[in-house]
Image (cartoon, rainbow, N blue to C red; front, side):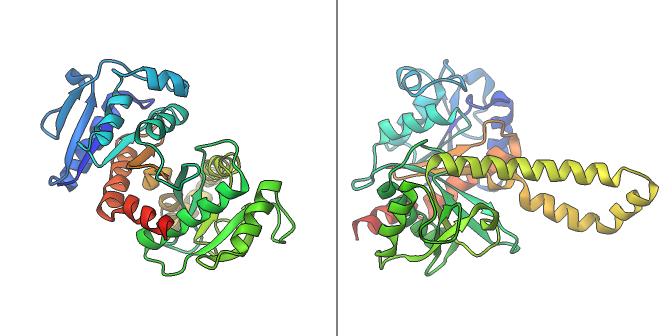
Amino acid sequence: MISIALDMMGGDLGSAATLEGAKIFHAAHPEVKLILVGKKEELSSEIGEIVDARDVVAMDAGPLEALKARESSMYKAVELVKANEAQGVVSCGGTGAYLSCATVRLRLIPGVKRSALITAFPTKIKGKKVVVLDAGASNENSGEEIAQFALMGSLYSKFVYGLESPKVYLLSNGGEEHKGSPEGKEAFALLKEDAKLNFCGNIEAREALSGEADVIATDGFSGNLLLKSTEGTAKLMSGMLKDAFKRNIFSMLGYLLCKKGISEMKETMSSKKVGGAMLVGVNGTVVKAHGNSDGEAFANAIEVAYKLISSNMVDKIKEGLSS
């Protein structure tokens, strides 16, 4: 039986949102064991086992604070994976605190130089995703680490999306080989010589969502900027479209004619549908949900963990790295 530990207290919206998400997921997957970690009086035993945790790690807490807070819902949820009582863990908690706690307690897979957050972005090709890593687990990375991110991203894309030979790119400020940061250039040289990967060179941020790339590797700082700027642009465009169609009766009629297309675009760009990002490189399935996740978004984050566990993603990354 698959079991997933849930940090029920970590998000901006509190346990009400995470409980709603757990209920949505449980209704779709009653066979999966959910372990709800948090203040027991705010949770429901009807959808899973409850582990009482009285402390909550603040969103702005640092890594050391998270590791010291052993009675917190975040720490106890991660410990369930370490103790093999759960195969995966999901949290909306602060990124730095959660990822540090998971990395220290679960430890890196042998051979992994640094863990990375990997997440799926929509592209202009309907139904196609591009996976990007690191999306913010670190602020600084060496060329060697970025090259290894490319390998882990390729394995993820192969086993999650079924691509035989995923096209791997490096995020850069130009398509030419000589462009990029010093670390990016170092990664380029390493990847160029790696026969195991279908390395296709550099790609600019403006082309990242074109559908050309299957995997985009970058340092955590740049990857997080790409993530946040994409989310911000989607939100801006949504607001501008709404204002444009509200302008007068004729624009409102125009909205009715293209309502279906706009709804599809909104659905494609919604961060709620992505659910969460996986921390690759550690001994366990660790999924980071958005800090302000509502019920739908948290349910989708649990779904991400479920799919990764079902596909034995961690073991496949171990095998891929060892070979």
